[in-house]
Length: 117
Image (cartoon, rainbow, N blue to C red; front, side, top):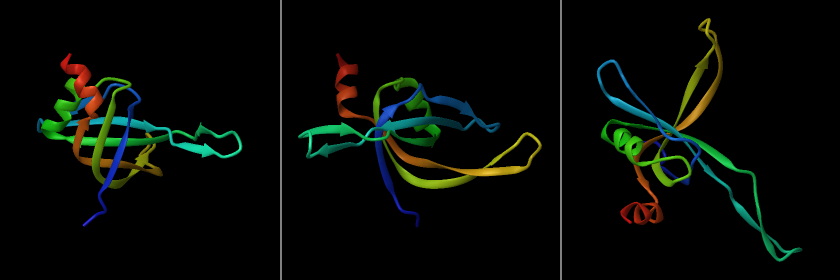
């Protein structure tokens, strides 16, 4: 069984919703989180390098996220990492990329409260 990960971040762009030939919904999106570290010399927090995580979600969840989430909203996704090959136009494999295949996704509670207003 793969290791389950939780990633919380802000949407880099609106989710990209597509459908397979059989009609199954699939949404792709990128979450970004910027870690903060405490600097003892300045007695203040400093932003670290942003972490970007590609996420893919299938079925009803894909449609729900695409309908409700927009760029900048805070989301969380729970799933496992998958590695996929990336191909050139001529079919030659170039590099691999990793995405989080989410089995649960949701808007962060603060975003939910704002939507209810």
